[in-house]
Image (cartoon, rainbow, N blue to C red; front, side, top):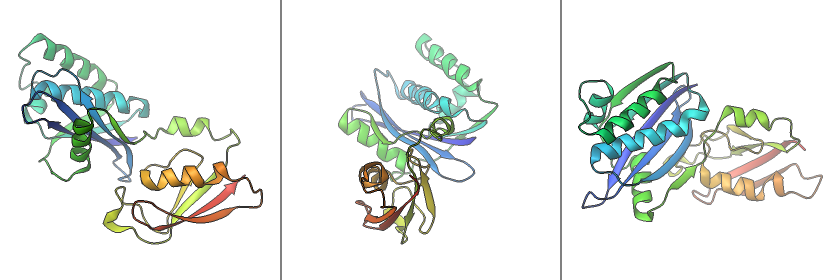
Amino acid sequence: MDLVLQIDLASDRHGSRYACGIVVTDNHTARTLHEVGHVIDEASSVLAADFAALHHGLELIAPMQPDTLEIRCVSQALVEHLTGIATPSDTALQATLQRVLEQLLQIDNWQFTRVDREAKSRSVQLANSALVDDDDVVAMEPVVAEKRQRREHTGVPQWTVELLEDPGVDCPARCVARRKYPFGPDVPAGFCVHAARVVLTDGPLTWTDPDLSAMTTLCPHCDVSMRIQCVDR
């Protein structure tokens, strides 16, 4: 699996509280695999918060077992420390750096890309939400191939969801119209969390009529029509 890990940081006006936004995508398909806003406890500086955010992000993707990983972050200081240009100034940062390097050693190929902060990016939004709520915000549960495989033969319904019209920029996951997204019952990578909530609440898992094989419903976020088609009862 070829992944991109996007990390952005948010802090309060005094710089005493921090949170990070993390978005994991498949580099080949551009599908979103995981979205979370995470509150960082007891960070003594912006750099310490950056290290903590990266450490948490690497923990999140470990079950996905990526073959390659691109880490995109805003902090030039973080990149310099991880590439050996700079040295941590205290023992706490040194310990965190060591843990991060140990995590990276589990991945065959990885690289860092410093990017400019985009105020409206998804990772920034997640970081701000976690900071305001003072709690983690999981916008999309992680999608792991191994998890899907374990459920292939459990006898649960298998179905597809097709958006009947293009949601456009209103869709936070940029779902594509006329594409059949497979459920079973895991949510497919890149599928809108708002639409998925309706599919899992009203879809085949709750159908009691044995003759019912399809239905049309609406995404509560952008009001786009969706067709749910059961392919295995």
